[in-house]
Image 1: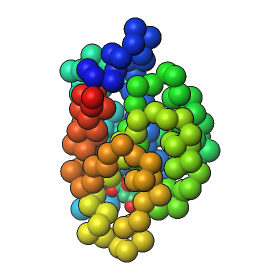
Image 2: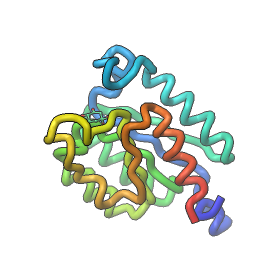
Image 3: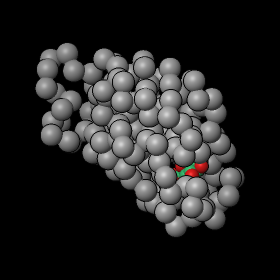
Image 4: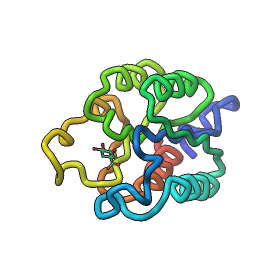
Length: 153
Ligand code: DQA
């Protein structure tokens, strides 16, 4: 369990955050994002976390400030954050600052391979403050992110 068991008081929860439009997963541009829904993503995350003996707080918001508040609340309460910031990836210095500020290890996930898409999706404000980045693995990427947070040294 690595970092999650460093101290007796270490939180055994992970926060999984999804940004704008990810509530539409399953019906939104399925050729790009697939047909799995956000509920499917949540179930995948809970199953994967259970393998590691950790709980998951799962949140989706279309609002930047709600995501930032959730990141702030993760300090001291979550062992790690998995975030798919959606389009905020490419625009939000504020979300990057929040991740840097709370010092909770964070894995950035993108369902699609953003590097095979429009040029404006090639830059991420989040990647420089992320512990790891998983791109283009479909919704499996959320599971890989949880594996990474649960087993990192
Ligand atoms: C996304 C990629 C972003 O460019 C896009 O704005 C999204 C989803 C992905 O998961 O592939 O909303 O983060």
